[in-house]
Amino acid sequence: MASLLKRTPLASQLSHHDRGQGCVAYDRQVLPTYGYKPNTAAGIVFVVVFFITFLTHCVQTVVKRKWWYSLFAVGALGMISMDTSSPCFFSAAIYYVLGQLIRLWGPRYSPLSPRLYLIIFASFDLLSIIIQAVGGGTASKASAAEPPQSTLTGTHEMMAGIIIQLVSMSVFAILFLWVIWSARAVPKDSKTQLLLVTTSVSAACIIIRNFYRAIELSQGWKGYLITHEVYFCVLDGALMVIAAVVFNLVHPAWRLPAAGGPESSVEQETEEKTTR
Figure 1 (cartoon, one colour):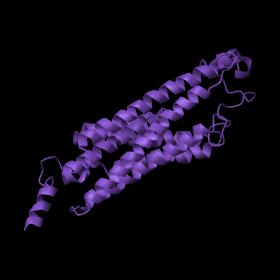
Figure 2 (figure 1 turned 45 degrees about the horizontal axis):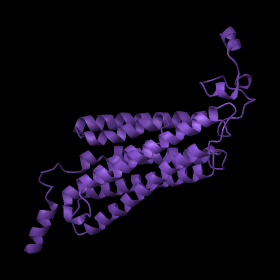
Figure 3 (figure 1 turned 45 degrees about the vertical axis):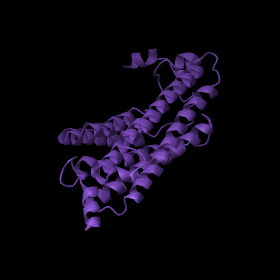
């Protein structure tokens, strides 16, 4: 083992280009990428929590055979791998939840059909993912060049992708509140009311997280937010933990009645009572 470590070059012994080609031994002479040495304990906690919520979402999806909700599991798995586009999968699942609520209450309470929510907002999320991926690749290529080139173009592309996601989710949140307000007279049992609170909390966490990421990138790779780990842990990691775990505790598949079931004709029952 000692001879192997002796043959392993330190980062300070490599060119800037070679450092970006893979993992190298930790070297105190080389400054960390983000200006700090990541907290190992925090990283382990987040990986364990996201892995638990990932497994739980997988089980919940399989048991109820509601495959759209597997998007929660995909999002949790993405958070483990530090994929910045992972919140888009949580958002897509939330779009589906709203669609189910509209089917339950009746289409007259929504300006859009359940299908349109998925088509419109999922399309913007997909566009956001693509732009962020392109921007990340551009910034990484510029950083690994010899000599290093400006990462400004890639940073702006990534920020554009996050802003698209932020605006899209914010517009969805407004429509979500619109539907809830329009359907305020519709009778709701405790399960549905709890699901509304859960969905609102998860969506709010995603929006706040996107605000943070947009401001973080606007400051550049050496900005205050990106060089202080506590903001990343609280405004990214912790918020996404909440966004994922609340749906483990209050899963839509257990809270929403099956389409065509005895509780799925709320609008019809309300109209009958009004007629009487």
